Image (tube, rainbow, N blue to C red):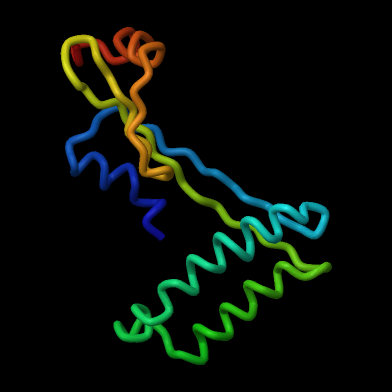
Length: 128
């Protein structure tokens, strides 16, 4: 549930002008590429990947975890629906005089775009 805390976490890390927005994913059997590519091979695989850590930490019982994985696969069946909301946080980063980058938490990437930098110098006065 870190998504709801992104604004606070980035502020505590020293970022300003933070923009947090929801990114909803909806997948049903009419979107077969997303059933395979996202529901099964991305989201469920990601959750399965933390099984041993979660069990070792005592966060969840083994049977409960395994049932949750079964339930996730159930959403990928013909009459299943998968819906999840991610949160994306974006904040400008000063790299030098009039040079900005964008830090995006969801993608864990750092963007350097001169067009964005030009817009940010107008939007974030005093940060150049």
